[in-house]
Length: 290
Length: 348
Image 1 (cartoon, chains in turn blue, green):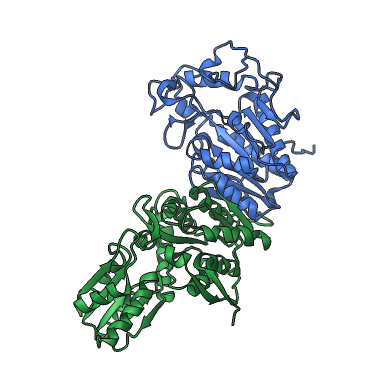
Image 2 (tube, rainbow over the protein chains, first blue to last red; image 1 turned 180 degrees about the vertical axis):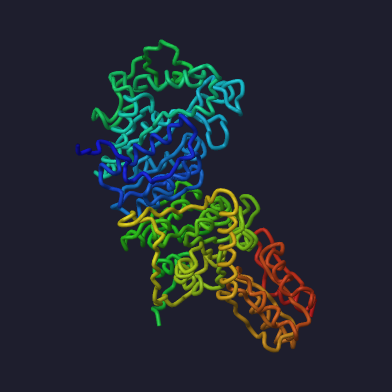
């Protein structure tokens, strides 16, 4: 009997054992990236930027030209690379502390200039590499080493919503939020990131994909419990519908790129459910909740 | 002979960098270096080169990092407070062994200080303003011609040693106009097999300064130090003036050195045997060149527009052989030739 392979490790994925914790989303996402790059046939012209954080050694796992960057500075490094190499496919792989805290200025201005590179924004609501500190995206009530009593919006602010913030700008061609949660979520993530790469290759500006990703280690699941409080909140967050466009049924944030509309429809307030802890309503943008 | 033109120091620097093969410029507005950014905004796009006004000094240096990682000749310029902001990126470039040009048109500090010329960033430039064991190759021009020439030559040095080069000038040199000859030298080309241009027919390249724990990181650091020892041997540049039969050695760089030259003339006219040694590379510092000339010297006088920074390196070079005097003006004040001359008379 002749055996034919039906599934193989992507070529772009190096044959290395990853240092990520069990259950971490980075390993899945690395593999998805490798698959997408193989499928698009762009390995030889793709350049990655991996800033400080859990994924700083991306170059150990993906067989691509990859630059480390200082904490938060990936948008500037990616700008430098993509401006100098107009034919290249450039992507930045940033965490939430990196992109939404120390590198907020860089990402907003790169988005506003409409730089030609893909952003994969891995949001696991915590600083992983440094040991579980509060991130700009940490959910209200979520505990961390620096907010042991849970995030209190009174003194710590509410979680930053980068998709919503960046959607206020005119340049980005695609802004999406997806989740690494279950086979369907992972498949959607793969399709969305692939679309972002296709956008970049087509010369469209600043495609941006936020990927909600689990961090079991720092969400501190208790023995015997399947999910910690943080994880439960995160799952509710990740299963919510588009937080801006009420007409949207994709289950992701998609104010640009998918439905062709440049700006969300006038928003309706349908405040219900318990997501108020996760994405509080604000004047101006009102949340549409499941 | 290049064409003779008239520009200010900042513009001359920009033209020099372009002639030296600058592929991309990233900058942020700050006085007194704005003419340089403006010059690049006009002239880089005209020559189909990259110009980006960055959102911050921090972003600008990291764009330089990206351009350099892509194998291009990248530069940024700023003035003192802006250079402070760039230090993180400079350290990363040194750690990742990325070439590039950083220009500091010094102004007075500390803090916001003022936009007057100063030489108070010597420590920051020479001793490493960022974290870790690293060096920058620091060139200190003393004229518009040198500002222009050094900018043109700096990329070859940066590429040769795979490290950032700094041109340390000041608000006075940047703002003043002088006629100079356009640089028409030849640019060297360097193979950059490490550059990130797409992994065509090879395994992926990585640009990084993260090396995990020792011994990997220590080995990398030792290799960096070995490179720095080679540069100390090969790249020291300095200039002398009336030093051959001098008994008093003035040591000064940049704007101060120009003033010292005139003060030396005045002193010599008075029969005082004074001469000038002008370091052109502040790192590597011409220590051997100073100590080799001490036999006849009775004293050394260091003159700086600072509270006394380079004088520490002069003292290390002199190593107690003769007294080392210092004269400086601070906070954006520029000494006059007469002041230096009076100091010479007082100690001679």
